Structures are given as C-alpha cells and as structure tokens.
Amino acid sequence: MLFSRISRIQRTGINGCRWFLFHRPDHHHQFFRSENPLPPTESAQKVLGCRETFSRDLPALHGFSHNIHHQSSSIVEEQQDPFSLVADELSLLANRLRSMVVAEVPKLASAAEYFFKMGVEGKRFRPTVLLLMATALNVSVPEPYLSGPGDVLTKELRARQQSIAEITEMIHVASLLHDDVLDDADTRRGIGSLNFVMGNKLAVLAGDFLLSRACVALASLKNTEVVSLLAKVVEHLVTGETMQMTTTSQQCYCSMEYYMQKTYYKTTSLISNSCKAIALLAGQTAEVAMLAYEYGRNLGLAFQLIDDILDFTGTSASLGKGSLSDIRHGIITAPMLFAMEEFPQLRAVVDQGFDDPANVDLALEYLGKSRGIQRARELATKHANLAAAAIDSLPESDDEEVRKSRRALVHLTQRVITRTK
Image 1 (cartoon, one colour):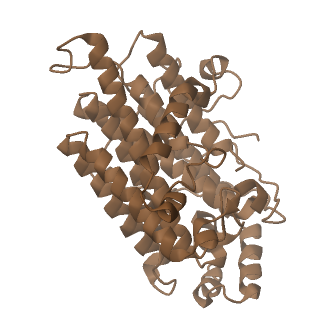
Image 2 (image 1 turned 30 degrees about the vertical axis):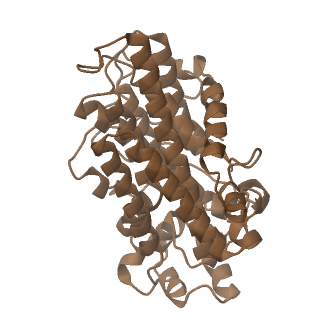
C-alpha cells in the first residue's frame, strides 16, 4: 500500500535522523486532533473492499512534520523481521505460559490454556515488543545494578523482564476472554471463542484464573513500582470496558476525546505500562522509562486505530473474528466518528442504534462517502511516527544488538499500520 510522505528533521541517530518528542505530564489524557482539515480526496465507492486514497501532505504535528521513506530509509535497508529476533525466547515464553496456566481442576485447566495451545497463541505481538524493548534498553544502567557478577546479573535481569512479557500476555488473554463474554462473540483467533465452546461462566472463571496467575508472577518480582503499574493496568481495563458500554445516547460517547481515552484504558495502557516496567526493572532513568512508555502508548494507539479500520475493510477470515462486529454491537470507532464530522446527519442514525440492519447499511453508506477511513489511517500513522520518535530519542549506543532491536521496534511501527489482519 502506498503511503503519503511526511517530512522529518534530520540528525545522526540509529536511523540517520532525529525525531523530536515532546512530553507533557498529562500526556495520556492529551491526544492528537487535526485542527486543519486535510485536502479533499476522492471518496471510496464502498466501505468493504474500498479503494483508499491518501493525501500527499498531512497536517503539522507539534509544529513539525515527519517523513516515512519506505524505499530510502536506512531502517529499511537493514530491516530484519522483528519476530525472528526473539523467536527462541518467544518459544521459551510459550512453553512457560502453558505450564503457568495449569490448574488442578481439569475443566478449568482446559479453559485457561485454550488460547495458549500450539497454533492458537496469536501473533504474540506484546511479548515480542517487550523482549525487543528489553534489549533496546541495555544501555548505561546506573548503580546499584552494576554491582556483582555481570553475566549472572544480566541473566537475572533478562529473566525478570521475560516475566513481564509473560504477565502481560496473561492479562491480555484474560481481557479477551472477558471481552468475548460481554460481546457475546462466537469466534476468536479463527476458532470458536471460549465462551461459545465452553459457556460464559467457565470463560469468566478462566479469565479470573489467568489474572490471579499474573498477580502471583507479578508479586514474585518484588518491585513495588512495577506491581503498582500493572495493577493500575487492570483497573484501566475495567474502566475502558465500562466506558465502551456507555449508551450512544450520551453526548460524550460520540467524541474523539472520549474514544481515545477509552482506547488508552482498554487496549493501550497494558503495552505502554509494560514497556515502562521493562525499563524500571533495568534501573533506567525516569526519562528513559517515559520514552519506553511513550513508545508503547503510541504503538498501541496506532494498532487499535488500524484494528478499527480493519473491522470495516477486512474479512472474517482474515481477522479471525466477524467483520463489522463493532458497529453491529453499537460500538462507535474512529472511522465512524470522523464520518460524523463530515456528515452530522449520521449522528441521528447512530442515536437510533444498530439493531435494525437498515441503520447499519445507512451508516456504512455515509462512511463510504466520507474520508473517515482515510483520516483514521492518517491518525494511526501519526501515532506510529511518535512511537518511532521515542525509540530514536533513547540514549545512543554502539552495541549492535541494542541498535538492531531499536531498528526492529521502529520497523514494528510500520508493520502495525500496513497490516491487513
């Protein structure tokens, strides 16, 4: 897919350029919103299978713009599949996760391991990000982390960081189990959802069991700051899901600010705070820990925005779940919110709900005439750029493994916005 080019400011860095990142203390409550409308482009004829067109210039962000070079960047020249860099560790993590979710009661054991079995583990996106982040932050660790035998210390630190990846994946899968019950979903990862196969009660209990195992593993790290971070994530998951359940008749539900805040709580808080936990365990400075957090936050937002687009443009087979599932459940996401800005009359359709298939068709018609999908993709691209900016702002390192992992993390930002499933 051809993406528009956006200028960026040059300097020497891991990819030959400096990205400028601005942090505000209340950053996770402030989200980008375009103040300057983009030039009009040809509307898609259909939402499903539509041909998307992109403007050549995107509005400025923080007073400057970025440039994505798919063909000329040194990142691309040295690209390596991010997942292959940590493939061996991912395999070890998968085996450990299967052993961690074993339960005494056979039925609960079968339910808890349902999405950890070989072949249905999913993309393992979050563990990959966290393992790459662990290597990317292997730089100038201050005292007291430098005391003691170096090799032993390094192995111990890596094991603790691997635990964060395992804990994160258990929390993520637990949230999926609970989400599927709330959404009455019947498929997940291309197979029958757990609630569909074993019933709602067992699916809820399996999710609770995974959360309890995650808590035990978290406590074993004996780091109160990390425990507090990931405990807050669980609170955010509940808050985000409750926000999503808000009725469409409430004014706040149909605003981009509300949507982005809900998205942070429901999907992005987990990966952003887990990235920060990786930095904290390594004894990194508050500034480096915040850069890790910013990477996870912006990558997570970009990922979810593309997810929302794929719900309209993907197929059930490619997504591993039903397409158009959000709108059929009355969930209003970025593409539809942008369409509502262009066509205010769409709000009346949204307020009526989508129990009537005719309302779904009418909403899709408005979406097809709008630039909703295009604008959502452009917003995803902006957050992907900010994630790359965070990595390039890390302290410089001459270690090739560190540099390779950082390039992989930047490459992941592009994989996120070009994925089709």
